[in-house]
Image 1: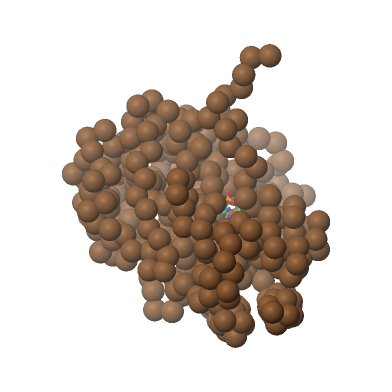
Image 2: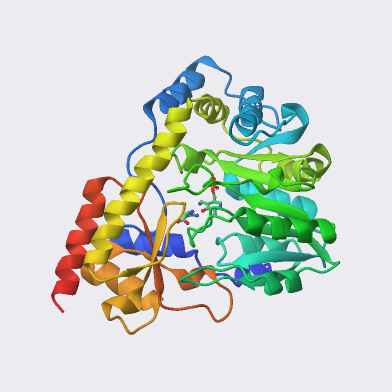
Length: 387
Ligand code: PMP
Ligand code: GLN
């Protein structure tokens, strides 16, 4: 038999699936793969039920149902003051995962360079490489996740087609500051590059931090694709409804990729997402506030166990230094042992890096009911207490 595509064949199963399977096998409290407890807001689900029965279920328009595209434009205006033409500047995709693939396949020419910031969400590098680009990696590391200006500058060149980055950032829980975004913008403009901004955690920002879409910075409106996800904003990760906002000229080639990747996304879920994006400000503020409460509750439990915690400004992930509880092995071993012996699952942060990753950090998801978080702490207390 002839060999399959070498780039994709070279990758193993994603860490999220690996750890979730192990968690199921060992009946552990799964704080590995990021998915909320519970079933999402009742009114959003009700809107999906109604649309399923009362609205057409045949192929919706390739760009997305008008209600959702209008809602995406209105959401951009309400939260960020962006004036978006829903007919030419919005596109609905099957999750942010497809949005990312459509942007990369639509914009990249083989041989282009793409700047990426490690740690990386799992799909970035495989798709960038499959699209034929040369990745230029800039690394940030715990505990401070500092973006080094010189390294970022050095990664850009006249071959740079785009930068792909994520704020608030998974797994770093870092919210990019206006200064950092300003530097990225300056480099994009200087090198005539695009920015693909993965902003799926836009409504999960804590304390006094602010989510700033790079698209709102001077000179970036025409060269940014901004990606959102109903999975994160409505705690419905299985729905896989994503949305892209980009200037028409940039969105057109992305649409060409989308039409051959999935073409469209279930219409009732699109309509329910439109309903969700129209919810009042209290919903969005409440989502962040309740996640922040969960962060604080879980962080306190972790601290009580002796874990050193890395600052968490956004997303629903928290990273710990595993050496602080006396674990001398690597993070992969730690996460496996914690699953099999303590009955709690985390994911190793090394999985988010390419070569020579830091190997003593683990990521826990805290998007869970109090009882789930408390049970995880109880199990770890019993385990570490055994000494
Ligand atoms: N980007 C990041 C940073 C994520 O954490 C996720 C969550 N899985 C995605 C993209 C994909 O989102 P979706 O489930 O909407 O495809
Ligand atoms: N975004 C989720 C996480 O980081 C997982 C998504 C997936 O399983 N593909 O945990």
